[in-house]
Length: 138
Image (cartoon, rainbow, N blue to C red; front, side, top):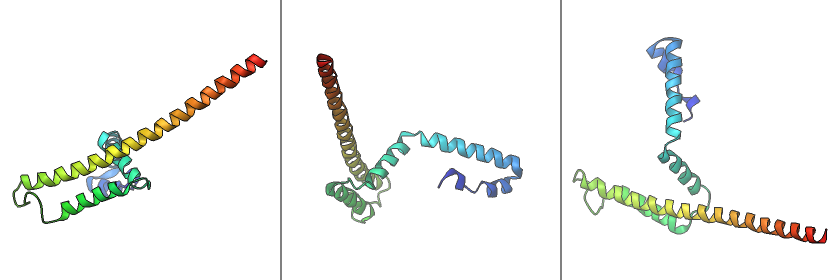
């Protein structure tokens, strides 16, 4: 949901008046700006874009699928009936799966950046060589 889609006019009517609507709108936009700068939100967007990019390997898809199946399965290493420990094993599996996929994502992004830097360096070397040849022949 985008900031402009938030039903501020309904909330302002409940609170009262246009002044209240302006205050709510201002606070909401401030909150959206603060949330957009969070590392968690930024990494979540990167992961979402990566998963939708078509660059995800079959291994990464399998890891995510197995983690999801483990989370929804009633069969766990530690039963969910045990209040905290039952949830911690689910959290651990989700963390491991996400950590694996995000590390692979970062590796692929690093390699892509390295390739583009390598191409730029080769172009620079060619340009320097061409400049030197033109200067010598010049």
